[in-house]
Image (tube, rainbow, N blue to C red; front, side):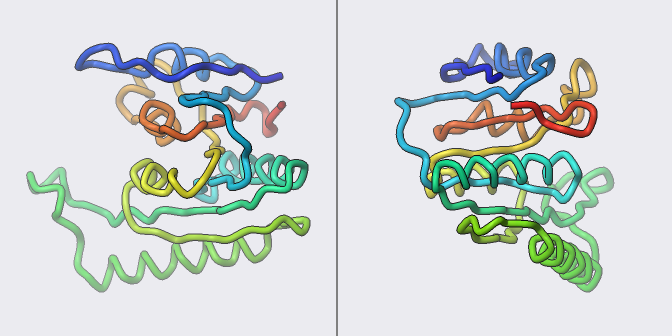
Length: 189
């Protein structure tokens, strides 16, 4: 029901995720990457983007936290829009009032979704952060014993071109990661 892999070994300059990426692309069940010696899981981080894929991962993480008496942190990262295609600097963003409006709208949507989420008594916190989602998850990893996240399961050229939060976290995390590829509306684990 679960594929467990050891740490990711980088393979030169062009590293596309190796075994973990290949396994995750075809796995029917979850893929657990254990980069360090196993330890008790008491704090779980779940990056969400409010897609059905990420909310399904949050439900599974909630069920896991309930069974092992762990605390859960649901985190959404807001990435301000950039005009990088027009300007060479990655610092270029839209007008401040537009970005602030988008940030407020996304924060409100996240807070509403988390308020409506069925936590089933699981101890939890929510965090709304700014930044690249994978970078934020990796910054918060030291406060957690496990990162649970969903992935759309893109493969081939679309995965290479679009990238993936799940792949970036799997590749760089020092904390164990449980990546769940959604298939037909549900996760099987």
